[in-house]
Image (cartoon, rainbow, N blue to C red):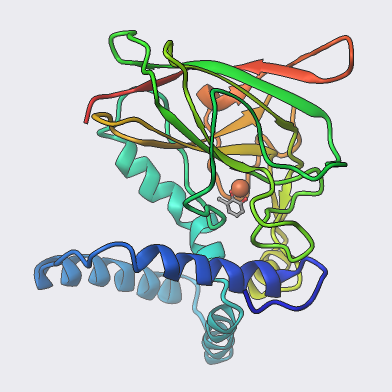
Length: 283
Ligand code: MBD
Ligand code: FE
């Protein structure tokens, strides 16, 4: 990572997300797409842009301002952030049409592969003095017939108590609050972590400036990210939210679903405990 600034900012998170995306793409082969498909989809996108210009009488000044902003999104490395916040939810909606079992949600820009594998009862890697309310997250992975899935992987990552992700904020140690928990013989897991804070899109970058200019808010509700996978099963990329949490009904990324909301119980010692079972379909 080339970020030297120690304070989390658009520069740090945007550029790092672009680097992470490039690294993940190099692991996949390019899929051949027919010219017919390219023409159909790209023409539909352009038709939408042309319609917006006509319907709203977009001026030359506004066109040039848009051009300037698009250049800045690229320079700031914010394309992964912008697209995952404002577009990915619809891609996920289409993918979900053919998906059974636990509901999916968007991947977002802050996934990092190849985190350490942890046993079924595990504490996520964290700082010795990791701030935040302790959270114990338990459950079971099953298939659509209700059979437990032993050796399933819960690839989990989430923001810290200040809303920052390790790998995308230079003040956090690598791998903080990230890990791959492997279920036991009965498909069960018990993960100790801390409750994440809501996530705020950096206000100092082009995505944040657009949000301000439009009078929108830059918040996502607090969430856990997960990819749950097991051999012979279709992996599920999802997020879990917290009942009563701020922004739950107005997620800027429109990625919440009622089935994905945890309702943690407060324990006598002030910590939180929550249970969630995952259901995978066969591949
Ligand atoms: C996030 O934490 C996130 O999950 C998404 C989808 C977009 C921006 C930040
Ligand atoms: Fe997130």
